[in-house]
Length: 267
Ligand SMILES: Nc1ncnc2c1ncn2[C@@H]1O[C@H](COP(=O)(O)OP(=O)(O)OP(=O)(O)O)[C@@H](O)[C@H]1O
Image (cartoon, rainbow, N blue to C red; front, side, top):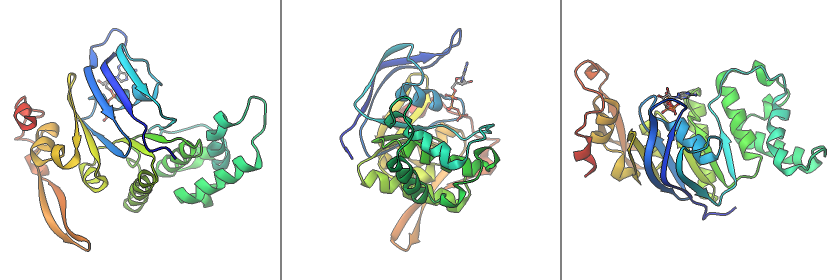
C-alpha cells in the first residue's frame, strides 16, 4: 500500500449556486497518516471533503492528488434492499470490468473486509433494515474493499456506540500504520487527540488551518471554535499520562460562539 499520497488544495473556493462562499482562499496540503477535520456545524466540513474526493467541483482554485480515494459518506436512512454482502461487494465495481460478474477473488476480498470491520455476521442482512451504526460500518467496508490508499470519511463514528467508536478508531489507526492515508471529519476532539497525526481546523470561510494535533487542538482553540469552555486535564492511564478533554456544558449561556479573538490563539 503506498504511503506517499498527498491531497492538495490551491487557492480553493466553493459556494453552492446563488449562495455565499462556504470556503475561499484555502491552501492546504494533506499528506498520508491521519488528518482530522474539526469545525462547528455548517462550517463546510462535508463540502470540503466532497471537493477533495472529487464528488463536488470547486468554484475556484484546484485540488490535486495522486491517491486512489475511498469515500465514506455519513450513514443515512436507505431504501437499498441489497444484502450487506452485495453492498460491500459493489465497492469492487471499479475493479470489475463492464458487464463482467465479480470474481471469486472479489467475493473473498469482500468476506475479508467484512471480518476486518467486524460485521461478518451481518453479511446476509438487508442493508435497508440495519441500524444507523451498522450502516456506517458497512459503508466503511464498502470503501475499503475498493483497495483505495486514501480513505476519506465523513463523521465515521457519529452513529456508533462507544465500543464501535473504539473499533473504528482502532481500525483507522491500524490502516494508517499500514500506509493508508486517512482524512476524516468529526465532532469529537477527544477522538482527534486519541488518533494524533494532524488536524484541520475550519474557523471561518477564509480561515482554515492545518497543523499537528498537539499544536492545534488546544483548550483555547476548541473553546473559541465551539463557543463553549473546553478544558484539558491529564489522567493516569494504563500507558502513562494521557490528556483528556472536559467540556463545561454549563458555560453554554455565557460563552460567545467563535469569538474573533481566535486569531490570537493561532498566532
Ligand atoms: N446543497 C446545498 N445547497 C446550498 N447550501 C448547502 C447545500 N449543502 C450544504 N449547504 C450549506 O453549506 C454550508 C456547509 O455545509 P456542510 O454540510 O459542508 O457543513 P458541515 O461542516 O459538514 O456541517 P455539519 O457539521 O452540520 O455536518 C452550510 O451552511 C450548509 O447549509
